Image 1 (cartoon, rainbow, N blue to C red):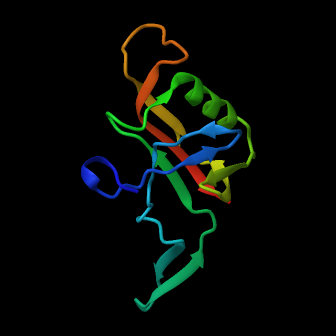
Image 2 (cartoon, one colour; image 1 turned 135 degrees about the vertical axis):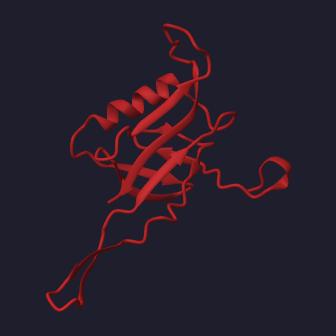
Length: 138
C-alpha cells in the first residue's frame, strides 16, 4: 500500500476482536522475535551446554504515531475492557486472514495512547495518538 509521498507503508486494514476497528495502525514486524529460546550453561570442564526450544505465540503489536493512526477514547476503552478478561482469546481479522490472539498481560500496558487534547475530563470521542496495542498469536 502506498502512503504519504508514495512510500510503501505497513498500514493494515484490521478488525480486532469484537468488531473493534483498528485500521490505520501499523503492525510491528517484530524483527526481534525468533521463536527460539536458548539457555546456556558451562560444564565443569568449561564446555558450553546449550538447550534450545521453540516458543509458541508470536508477539503482534499495532501502533500509531504522533500524527497518524489515532483511535478515539471509546475504542481504547473497549480494548481495555477486553484485556481485563483473564484467559480470553479473540479473533484478529487482517483483510480476511484470521488469527487467534490474546492480550500480552505479562507485558503491561497492553493498550496505551496519549490524548491529543489535554484536559481534565476526556470526551468519549476525543482522539488519542501514539497508540500501542500488545497482542500475541496463540
